[in-house]
Length: 430
Image 1: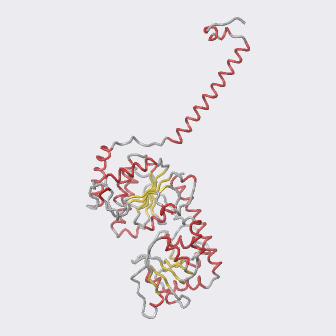
Image 2: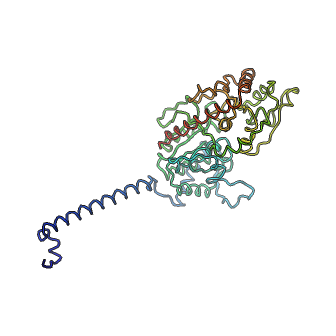
Image 3: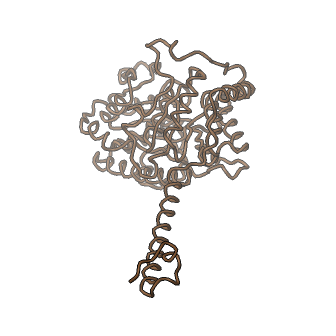
């Protein structure tokens, strides 16, 4: 066949039938390759591109922070002055004002694939809420509730959050620091990323910080800053579709981490009362009811100011709180944990005890799940001010075979854990 020049090659009429078929096949292959490449590009974009707003420069950040602080001062009064000091000014003795994936917040966390890029933000001083957030799957950021975060702190935390490429961000409880951080991150992320959980009941609104915390979260929901808000109490209502009403049950710590504590069980105490001083935890009624039971010989309690009648005081042993691990050891050394409180949402003291297989005497928490479980018939008190009813629940639990009670206790908590993760999935729209 005679040689052809370039113009002949580009002229389809110059091609033989077999050459045209071969050429057409190569074109089809190239089109398929092009489509596959386009599909891969779309997948990569879907995976790595977030609807993140335009990044702010440090100067823009500073100006915007001034606006946030002015707004917070109106809501919190004078409790949130502008802080420009560097973190270098802090003494080494002071704890860090924020912690990223600290071991205390990750060691007991469960692992769920769809939560890998969920970021939980909470306060390092509020140990109950910190324990609850620490048991959930995802990344963890603990900020200070008591020390004002400086401009540099807020800027650094913002950059850390951006570097984590979060799929969702969950803010647990409100403080001036948390409110400022939410507003800052709302400049970087669409509201579909931002979620808030209020670990408190409306009955606590008599306390101004609790009231302001709930109202600021609801205001942020109204303004479209937050995608969803949850107030952790059954029956709470608000006129916004972004309110999530099924209770977000707290989850127990990762069981593998609890087994060593359970293995060291020695039953040094009949009853352990983990509640602190104050009216909410109802520690006096719990301790008095337990001490009146002949079946109870020893009571361990954190509440240092609990005093019982002289003929019962010998049963009470005050224990100084150290940390969460110590609490679980004390639970393992008891037959019962007691937390029949006056006001509570879903306390981690109950959950940790139940995960260890140690029953916990409790008031009706109105959890909207598993209220008919056999475990509740033994442990739930309808009137937490009734000494006789609390005594009846104590005696009922102590009269049962230990292995049986431990089994139904763990079963109850395991089923709650499944519901907890499923509801967080619904809440976060994962």
